[in-house]
Figure 1 (tube, one colour):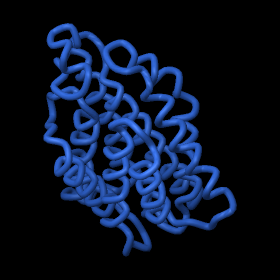
Figure 2 (cartoon, rainbow, N blue to C red):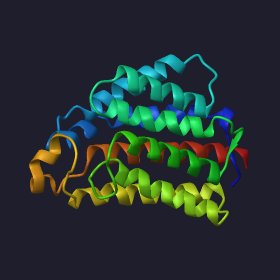
Figure 3 (cartoon, rainbow, N blue to C red):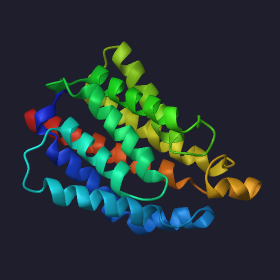
Length: 216
């Protein structure tokens, strides 16, 4: 399947919103096991505010990511507002000049988001954070781009990588946030950030795949 038109991004953005809204209770439940229990509520608040603001707008995928990132960074409390705000804003900046987003373009966007995140949070794979989902998803897209894999197939592989990364956090010990104080007791539970990141990446991929299939 071919490339994704940046201009056709609004349905993809709204799909990302919907998955957070549908999973807000689940995300807070996961977070509540070793954290504050407010992850789902905070994410839902920010994503719903974003959806309300773009309802009557014609907006590109990257412009939407930038608006979502700015909203999360400036208006949503907790640690996840600045974290996701940075990821989305940096993704948007990396792709803002693209009329069509191919495998390499999306890989560059995820890479920029991850690099931006790592500039404000000293987290790496294995620290039980959303990096455990985002980094392998980025790696899969980068490898797919290097082998000239079409976007459709690359997105399917990206979803699998994000899910595997999310699942890996269950047996990890938390290194950041409130859960880090639990030490070994944080093992055996999924990380809420990795869980929401996997949901978002999966919804993003599914939304783009629907756009690609519509062109066929």
